[in-house]
Image (cartoon, rainbow, N blue to C red; front, side, top):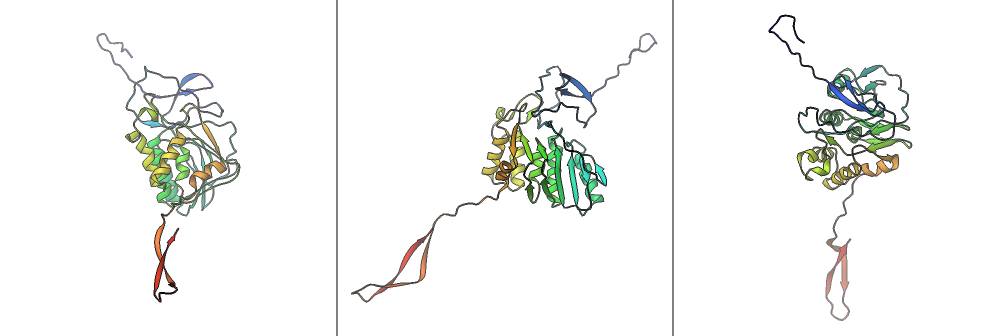
Length: 278
């Protein structure tokens, strides 16, 4: 803004966050950490490229996915960001995570140390993947179970939070949705080497949550099987297949019977006969 005094000029620089609103078909200004209003559709909105926007640094983002039908919020005793405390033992997830979510989670656990279950009722995703994975590690460190009730919806980055539960349960009628991430240069997982840091960010997390390397890669490939602007929807039974215990087949081993002395007719000798235990 130019001052009235001649020869002097003061320039004020402002910065803000914009997100693409598919309903308005335009970029809208939002406060940092606050999700922009989204159309209630079954897939994530396509985000047109904005080359004129300043790009700070490349980082993967699993954008929150909108959903057609939102369950009504249950009554709670306290609210901490997207976390709603239902009683002394249960909390519910009713919103997407953002930069402040790790602090919200810490405050909730400080005030309600007896919590044992996180019910994921309406979990659309995240606006900050690094913070979201930090929340996941906190869920695991505090020994919380994750549960998706009938009608519950877990989408995008919230799937990582579901995997953090020390035990994970899903009721019939729950829905999950996954899609690939997109960095702030418009690149997706396939634009990087398989073990590039951007991909290892998720593979290492899945390993921390108990998956073998093989299952982590298979699960990650499944989440990236659709582009960022779309979604792959999974029913309860399909998601249960990814959280079943992994059993590794043991190779055959050579063993000996300890009561298998067999007499050889006509020789008067005996020997112990080996057998293959498969």
